[in-house]
Amino acid sequence: MCNRDIAARRRQHGVTLVELLVGLVIGLLVVTAAITTMLLSRTTAAAVSDMTQLQQQGSFALRMFGTQARQAGSVELTGENDLGAVSFDSTFTGFNGTGVAVSGTEGIGGAPDTVSFSNQPSTALARDCLGNIAGARMDSTFSVVKGNLRCQGASGLPQPLVENVADFQVWYRVKTSPSSIRRMTAEEVDDAKLWNAVRSVEICLDLQGTETGDHGRSTHVDCDGKVVPRKGLPRVLFRNVFDLRTQGT
Image 1 (cartoon, one colour):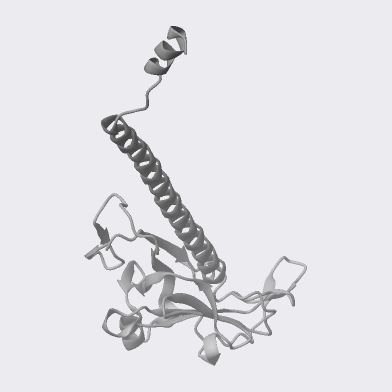
Image 2 (cartoon, rainbow, N blue to C red; image 1 turned 180 degrees about the vertical axis):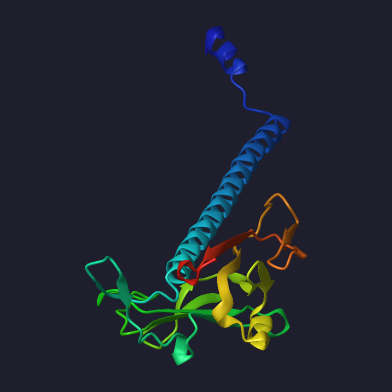
């Protein structure tokens, strides 16, 4: 064997145990960082998706409330004379035949409320909160059962509209005198027999997501103004006041 081959073999050698361990550690660190980044991205994406869904559900619910509330008590136009005077159908009987356009019940012990709206459809194709064609009177009742906001319409069978409902509270702006409007609960309105004096309805819908994570704050202010823990879940409060346009001012 020539001296050249011997010199080449001497230059060829493997890595030491220390070098191998160092390489393994560096590889594990890279893999760990990649997995951590992936999990963080996945958690963030899930949280964003959860919050987006809550926003969509809340917007849909408020739109549905507004559609029913703003037409509560409306009656069908039956004619107009040569002088421009109009006449309206006088057969409207109100929610469940009570003569009132808005009604509700107070949740026991802070439980979610219920609220009902009634009107006389102006066309034969008018639809209730579930898309059903109504008859001579259109009643829609909103309630919460097992975290689902439900509506009972013309079919008489309640159907879920929105899920993940943590709370649902309703107040009524009632005209108690020619110059006074009072904010009242359903129980207060019922005790005073002032359902016909309701001028607007205040809706508060509290939605809670399902994806745990860091959502910026550890507490949440609910419909009653109380500070409650988030428990790592996203919560969004939707609140709006809907005027009953047919009830005057």
